[in-house]
Image (cartoon, rainbow, N blue to C red; front, side):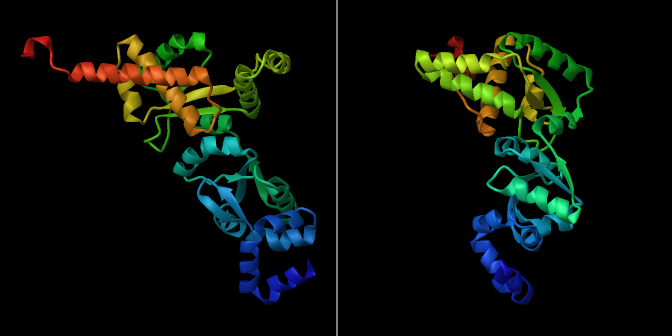
Length: 276
């Protein structure tokens, strides 16, 4: 360690090159030594919503370290955080959480832990009467499927929907997917483990009120078509967020896409009166 500390002082370029090559090994050392942590950590690279970034560059732009402790949760909010000119650092990889907390404590850096639910709750709510009616309508429509839908204004405009879920809910959902594919013995064990937490619900499908597709959906009168659009967006948002997708969700996606294609083709096909 003394050799590396001397290198950081007297041969900066050589030191930076060394750090770039041996990131993971250095992180394991940094987590165990306070002095080494202060010297090395600023030059380590971390995953952020703006791409990989050295901590020294992050702190040059932001006073507070906004962190999220789960890779899965980071994937849920990285797009919208970036679009809102925020930079969230993911500490879900090996040693990162321990290093960040240690460095922040040693150097007096402010740390703010964020999560998908709090991020989405801070997005701008809709207040247009038509959109509020639409929101009430779709929540009534999907009540039987135990899916909460919210409607917010957010960027990027090209993202029509965002599915957010807590780690506990993701654990329950993933366990249920495994239960579907295992034998009766293990299925019963998984069921016993998850049943105690089954009443816990902390997931939502957040529709983007800035997205053109969502705005067009709000004008639909046909209940069947609207529900199909919602189901397809739901599964698409699961896939975008790297969530576990089971047979039920894949069936919804397949049936939804077939219905929408048939509807589109019927609309484009010539009527019987114009056929020769």
